[in-house]
Length: 161
Image (cartoon, rainbow, N blue to C red; front, side, top):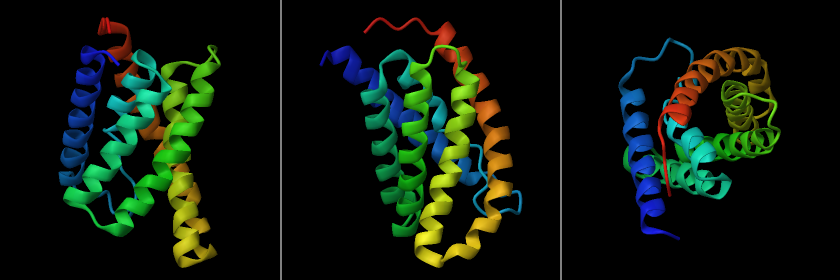
């Protein structure tokens, strides 16, 4: 792997960690689990500019490091479940060239929330499923915002790696 490619990936992990920290400082809207997903800007950028393997690496490394530095075991479980399902969905849909970066981001946001609900179900039981419609709505709205920013970056940043 080229040094420049590794450097870009490391910068994206660092950026994703910073965005995760910044997001943790934003007051909750009163609904647990509802977040913007700012770190996904870096993940989507890497997915489009470097490829799916690199996006998986950046995303999972960010989840592990942020959980280690700012979270706990439960946050690692929820984040990892959401990140894995989100990544699978985004990778599959990105290969289908008819979908925009925003659409891929929306699917990623929704699947992230589905992954978290599945983990909550495994840990707490099936009653958490009733919370899914709220998270799907928030994942859609956040996915649109994150996808729009990501699309701007993907189109404007010329990366030769």
